[in-house]
Length: 243
Image 1 (cartoon, rainbow, N blue to C red):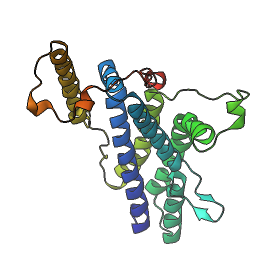
Image 2: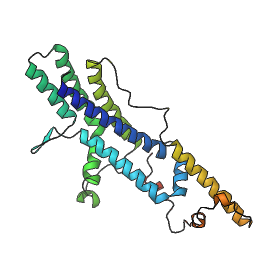
Image 3: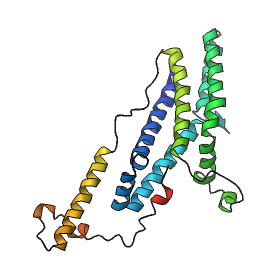
Image 4: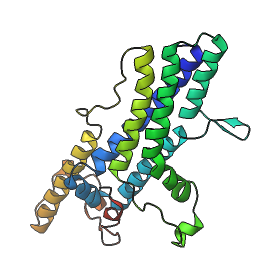
């Protein structure tokens, strides 16, 4: 593997690992247990609605960037197509392209055009018409677009991207990169803290209702315990919940 191919591969690999971690957090918080969604709604509905939207849109944008054309105007993009171009240039310059390298280029083109582009098409369309731009036809409902991005859309896209990268890894290194860690929760600390805070609020409410004395170590700011949700729409987060 030449240094330029290695640098390009390392960039895509790190980018994909970052996207995968972001997706894992998104799914742990908003797609694993209904109880978690209810807990987030009860804690700070609009804040976690923004968190969900931010993680989702950032994930879509990051995937879409990897699907950019190799060049736009005078600027080069570091994308999957660009990686194949770099691979072609390197093997062409050396004039020693082996049959296995030619086979790799064919394999990568097949994965990209028949698999990755198919699984990311919906995400690219959503990026172009609802994230990067406010498409007028979509707003006027004269053009159709997938209204909701689901975890299935994201998982299919990430699986195809992982397969692309690992086709290169297997060719040059004989091993795959592990992108997923199913037994490594990323948000358990946050969820436990929110659950504890919920229990504490309930306990304090019971003390107040019975006119009991609140322990000094629980009095940080009385206003925190008298916060009213009446001004907030508790369902605002649920409206955009991924399924």
